[in-house]
Image (cartoon, rainbow over all chains, first blue to last red; front, side):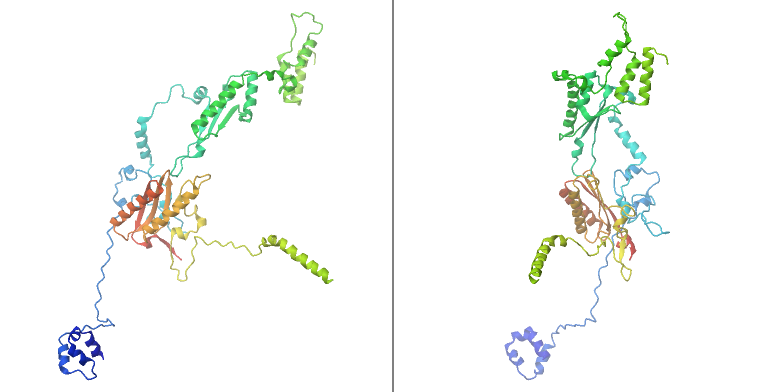
Length: 328
Length: 168
């Protein structure tokens, strides 16, 4: 049977029709046919493949890697050329035996090679003192001298009484805009501005709680406009407008009576009349009229404005006795 | 009596229907406080390699290990935190796919101003020429997508066992 299948595969048999008939006969093939087949050897499929030659696999050659250049570095090299800008840590470029990491007690921390922790933390290898000195030297030509007459804080505070505070934001974003950068704060010591009594009173009423009476500092915060410049302009406008408005006396302000006053003032009160009447008792001469002493006026105003306490009462008593000339 | 029972049962049903939503809110099972993320199971043969990053669970961040993303979005009142997180995720996926089976560590993404610096430890399994090509390819594509300059700062190791910190 195996010979039959072999014959079928053979091209020669297919081409020779006369032989093909013989193939299907049950008789054994004649000897002459076998002799003919010996000329061509059949390929035999060997399933075991025991004697098959092992193909030599191509050896994978690892590419040659240069040794870390930190081994070749000179001790007096220019470090700013090795590490010119901010960069993640690289062990082959840094000739320092650095280690980082937490290990079990007694064991050394992981070395700098293949240490991801060292790559994570920000390093300042580009900001060594010589590098900073170099950069300072480089930008020195853009600097201008400090203006004369502004050497001390006292001097420039006097010449520039208004402080303008705004914030710039450095952020790790594709945009440099930050909406909080629009906020502008203006601070000013109120003693820098010149007021009369009415104007000061009105100004303080206009600014409300923007004025801190303890430090005498006025603070104006502007953040309603989208840009910083606009907010600055607005804050300066507010300051100017409030200042000039405080000097205007409206007609309805005249109707303010003594009961509306927020402070007791000796000068405009009836007590002034009473005190002078007592002091000038029996003195008909209008040319030499006695007036209350300044100590008495101060103590009286303190007593009424600051409230009654032991100190102010005693002070008032002393001043009254002194003014009228009674013996203790 | 039976009529009363019927009445009461119908009333009961009604009251249960009314109280159903309130009753469903009461949770009686014990609280499951198991935290699994970033932690690895010990194998029986104790032959599972862990890097330093993997060996320290997340609660050691800022104590034994530091963050993989450095930016100002995660700070208080930081701007566009969600976009930054999504971009970082995309960068990590892109790097891991482009440098397939070469990345031995976590991908560290540091942002300064509009600059993105990406650091990672790679295996020296491909030739230097291919590596340079991949660096340029990654930087070019990422900077096109992120619309800002991207720098790759790689460190290479000979073998992936170099980054192994311990076996569990």
